Image (cartoon, rainbow over all chains, first blue to last red; front, side, top):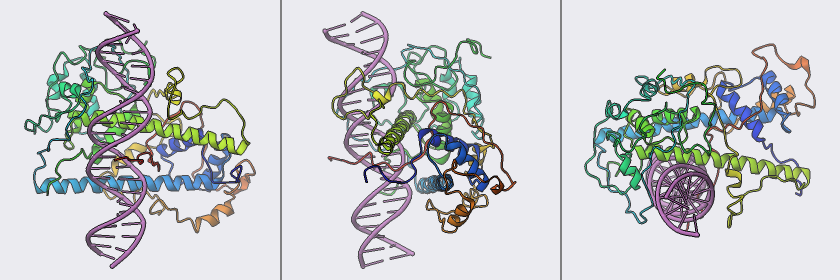
Length: 214
Length: 214
DNA sequence: GCAAATTAATGATTTATTCAAG
DNA sequence: CTTGAATAAATCATTAATTTGC
């Protein structure tokens, strides 16, 4: 009991990362030889056996599948619901208790242009990202109002965070945001934003895109 | 009441997929404008509001981080155990009470600066996403199991165990790796790399939310 | 097989930190 | 030193998935 004799395999972050990456890359059920290789490789980062690799892939795959199934069923259920009636009316959410300091947001503080290398989105209807990227510098206000369910709810005076309301984020996306609210320009491609120091990858923005609508 | 009294947003599989893909592509804290865009486009797949998008990214990011942290600490704990307690200055889980402002955010400061120039896999690529997308609308059961037939997350490895043992997969890779053991099929090299921590969204069992005092 | 009870996920809120102006 | 914006952590609450007893 002292030194956890030989509990079960506890993947190191590196190992996990690698395994996940492999999974993402398409590996799903490696054969013995592959498992051997993987194991050999991963053993560099910590103790590991072939069965660990084997089980990992098994589990991961199964879980993934489960997740997908779950999503589908949920979605279909939802559809079912929607077909029955119209689910437009959103009852007023719980009352607010604490008026948060909320505040405007897009104060246009730090423009962070982020260059997005590629956004291969294999399936967005009407090439979503393409569009998004395209309008990086133009007024998206007009764009935003285009093509989406305009089931503008009724006046549900939500009590969302102020800033959200103010930004119109509480609407079904049909609301155009006030020009004063959004960053004047530099509406980058869709990647990040933020204050610049935190997470985010402030990669090299030096060379690629300037202000050119390339 | 019949129709979902409208509680909370229930993302459709497509929406989820898109959001996840965006997240993987680097989007973490979209600004108002971006949220608007995203919302507008996602609304094509179902009802959605800006706040949903906002919250989704907040939560996803937070939980991802949490998971990462958990992983790390667990690993280190394990190391402690196995190594028999070596007071190395390993990152320790932040005290639940008074986190000093200075070193606070201990594990949450910059440790997760993950940049991903693109979500390219450092390993061979086989078109992972394509697949996922592909099966979004069709029978997913059976698709995944390319030659395999694992049902739920429980690995019915009763008979796998055998071949595993027989293949010597139960040994620590470093122990031995009979070159003659590997079948000449579909096996190649696995480029490896170890840098940057990348996290994916994998559900894990965590009992974070409990302790409810409600 | 179904329905209540349990449990795990996860959307939505709230609270605390942090950093930058003023 | 104070204030305000922004965001991360913690928490609450509800929904979906499992389990369990009939």
